[in-house]
Image 1 (cartoon, rainbow, N blue to C red):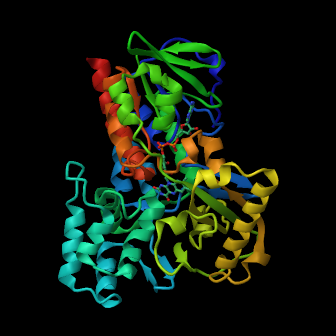
Image 2 (cartoon, protein in one colour):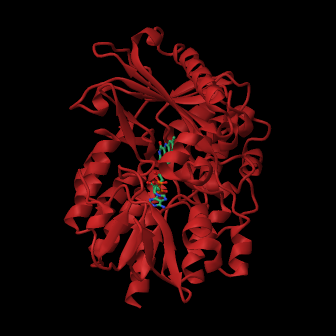
Image 3 (cartoon, rainbow, N blue to C red):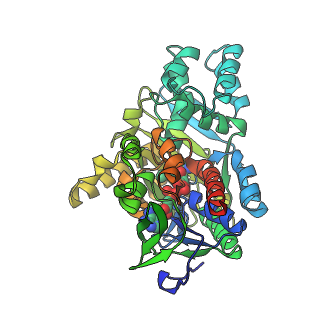
Length: 468
Ligand SMILES: Cc1cc2nc3c(=O)[nH]c(=O)nc-3n(C[C@H](O)[C@H](O)[C@H](O)COP(=O)(O)OP(=O)(O)OC[C@H]3O[C@@H](n4cnc5c(N)ncnc54)[C@H](O)[C@@H]3O)c2cc1C
């Protein structure tokens, strides 16, 4: 789908959305359905933000389509459309393989209950109490309990159980054992509801369907349109500066990261010192590294599972997972059924990563570090798909620098900010009337489901503001 350039845009709008991640797209869609005129501006030449894909040598690689909770079914039907909902399918073979245990699961409450009893020897009542406790966690609880304390309460000294429960969530939202247990509990419970799901047809199909609905609802989308500034005058939002001019709107929703939004887009001068004191406590979440493998046409491999949580590290450790030379990674295996119209075998290895480890390498060191990462992934992948090295015709790596370049996110963050970012995002419109933020924050409001649901919440705030 092609979009108009920023020079072709005329007039004012009720709302300008800065950024086309899943939060920005959903917010724009809701606001247009509510009758507001909406302009959506995206700096990249493709919409979707981190929900993205790229094509190489006939392969399409999905960047963040590894798995989401069942809640996406209801959310997509309610806030997008039935066709999108109908493409959501379950990933049934989730594999864990590490020195402490090897198992295959549907990643559902029922199956985890069985595994915890049969393979880890935990009493059923303990398992049920644990599920009941995490299932009841909500945002308004006391946040002083950490995930480590929660695990110790139910499974004292059981580092194997802690790993089973924590490792997937550390990949899914970057949370660690020392963060508020709620950041773990909400996301874990979402997955445990009914397992892990994916979008059949791939990210390109999903984003194409969303862009088409936005077009039908009258949202004007411009790609290649980097917003330089959110214009704040007399304490209120007046519009955005983009492409050398100002486009007016009484409200702006920033889907750029919250740190970018405050420091660079609105500018710190737009906020009072009490807000900035709170904002300066916000820590950005980690970034990611990935290695993409594409199989030569005609090559294939047997079913080895859909999502493989693999590690050769002795125990779970968030620091180990962030190390440049981590021995922990997930492999997402995409079989021809992922895109039935363009059958292909691809594999994406994902690792957590720290921006600062990669940011300051010179050109040669950066190239060598990427090559070494590719090699480590090959060695691990060959344990599951022997001979894959000879089968691939494309291999490429992405690092935190890549994520930073394409999304502009501070330090290439994959999941926005740690917990304290949520309060800033939720209160920004009180600090500067007309300014709203949507997108990954607070660990909870991240991932495909979190970003879409947050888009709906923020659209309601904007709608109330515009009508008041
Ligand atoms: C490697 C990786 C794997 C992941 N895997 C999964 C997964 O399997 N399941 C899952 O649920 N989630 C996954 N996620 C997380 C998920 O993709 C994100 O949480 C979600 O897509 C973020 O949506 P968002 O609304 O926060 O916006 P983002 O996707 O962060 O998009 C923000 C957009 O704003 C644009 N922008 C920024 N500044 C400007 C500006 N000044 N002007 C114009 N445009 C601007 C950016 O270009 C970008 O398009 C993964 C993330 C990563 C990085």
